[in-house]
Image (cartoon, rainbow, N blue to C red; front, side, top):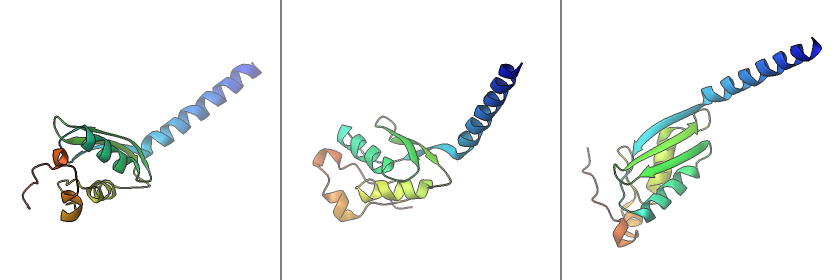
Length: 115
């Protein structure tokens, strides 16, 4: 009987901790302009450098960055700003011209028009 009670309490504790952490993780898709595998590496590394980012994957087919992050530690705007600092525009942030122009030729994507 004692063993069943301990197992029940441990199970409830584990369940409540899992639910607590699940509420903090958020997954979003962000449009990030780029072309190739070098872009993919650069974009993902920049996104993962933001405190609170758990996972970042950029798909070159649709130019979408899927990012999972702790929304108590960061925001999508902070992630977009980090990506822009390494030369990649998003729909909300623009990379500095100097940084964009320093990208390898294969990474210089067609820049979106200003909205």
